[in-house]
Image (cartoon, rainbow, N blue to C red):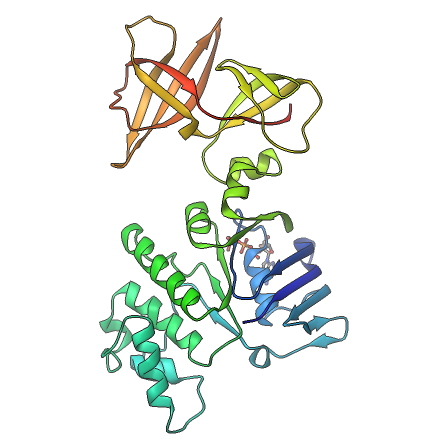
Length: 345
Ligand code: ATP
C-alpha cells in the first residue's frame, strides 16, 4: 500500500500543454479514476507517475519518497509501479505463464507465484495457453496478472477495457476492481468512460485541457460538480434557464430548491438537474399541459426520453430517465424530484 502524490506537475509537448500544474493525491489502497475528454492529459499523467514521460516541473512522491522532482527522475523499473496498457499487449510468442513470469526473477518460487496470480484473476489451469487462444477478457486479465506478479506498490491502468465489447467490459471491470481491492493496491485508472469511472473508483479526478478541475468521490463528482463543464461531462444533464432567489430557483419546470455551497448571486442562472430527477407521472390527454415525448431510447432497466416542454412560445428540450412505458408522440405530465444545482448564466 502506498500513497501517490503529485504536486504542481506540468508538461508541455512543444506548444501543446498536456498537464498544467496538477496536484493530485491518491490515498494508499485507493482506486482513483482519471476521467476527461480525449487529449486532456490523462495518459500523460499516468506515464509521468510510471516514469515513461519526464515532467517539465513538479514533484511526484510514492510513499513519501520523491520519484520525480527538480533533480530526481527515478527509473520506471525502480518505482514499484506496474502499468496495465490498453489491449493487454501480451507477448504473443509466450504462453500465459511465460507472460506472467516475464518480469519476475528466475527461481523456484516463480511457478508458485504464476499459479497464485492465475488463481487471483480467475484463470487457474490456463498457464499453457497462448494469448491467441484466449478471449479478449481473458487476455486483459492475464495483463493484470502480469502487472501484479512482482507485487507492485502502485498499479496504473491506461484505458484497460477499451478493446472489450460492452457486456464483457462491465464484467472484466468488476473482476479487475475486485482483484485490486483484494490486494489493497493503490491504483490509478485512466478512462474517458464516465460510467466506468463512477462505478469502479473510490475517487474520480476530472481533467480538462491539462488541468485537474475536480477530485472527489463518485457521488460528489456526479451530484456536486464544481462547474457546468464538469456537470456536462459527468453524466447526462438537463439545463434550464432560471432565476435564482435565495435558496430557490424559478424554472420552466417549477420552483426548485437549490443545493451547493458557492452559489452565484440572485438573478439569471443556469439550473441543472439529472434526467432521473424528472418523474413522468403518467400519460395525460393530448394537448394537456406537460411535456411531449419526441423520442425514447429503451435500455431494458429503464429508458431515456427526450421531451419537449412548452412554456409560452419557447419550447425546451429535456431528458428524462424513466421506467414509465412511454412512446414517441405521447403527452405526459412531469415533475422534478430533489434539488437543482445552479451556475452563473
Ligand atoms: P486520449 O483520451 O485521447 O488518450 P489523453 O487525455 O490521454 O487523451 P494525452 O495522451 O495525455 O491525452 O495527451 C495530452 C495532449 O498532449 C494532447 O494534446 C496530445 O496530442 C499531446 N501529446 C501527448 N503525447 C505527445 C507527444 N509524445 N508528442 C506531442 N504531443 C503529445
